[in-house]
Length: 168
Image (cartoon, rainbow, N blue to C red; front, side, top):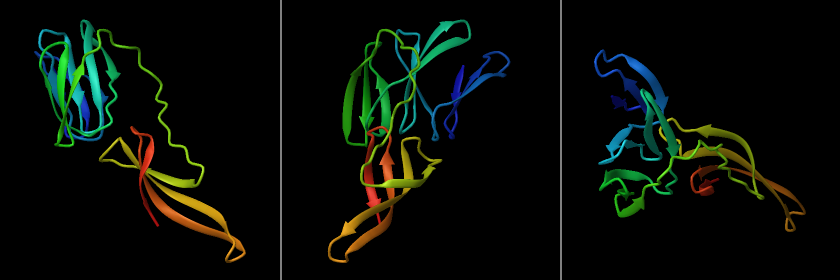
C-alpha cells in the first residue's frame, strides 16, 4: 500500500497493520500516484518530478526518474504502454513506457556560465526543479576606464539546465 503526502514523501505501508515499511522523499510538493493498467508499475509525480516504480520482489521495488521538461499538471495511464501527461495546463504529451527500468543514474544536471560567478544559492522548499543564485559579474568599461561590478539574483531551471530569469 502506497500513500503520498503533501510534502513529497511516499510511504510504503503494510496493508494489514498499516505500519510504515519505508519512506521515500520524491519531491517537495504533494505526491500523486497513477496506477498503470495491466502492469506491476505505478507513476509517482509532483509538478516537477516523475518517477516510474516497478515491483520486483515481495516488498521491494525499483524506481527510476523519467525526464520531463515541463511542469506536470496531471497524468493518466491509458494502458501499460502509453501515458498521457497534461503539462502547464495547456499541452498534452503522449509518452511510451520503457520496457525495462534502468539502474539509478548519478544526477549530472548543471548550469554553467561564462559571464557570472555564483556566490550563494538557495534550493526552494516548494520545488526541486528551480534554484536561486546570488551572482556576481564584472566587465571593463571603456567609458569609465575601469572595471565595473554588478550583482544580480538569478532563477535557474535545473531540468532545462538554463537560467530562466535575471534580476539586478
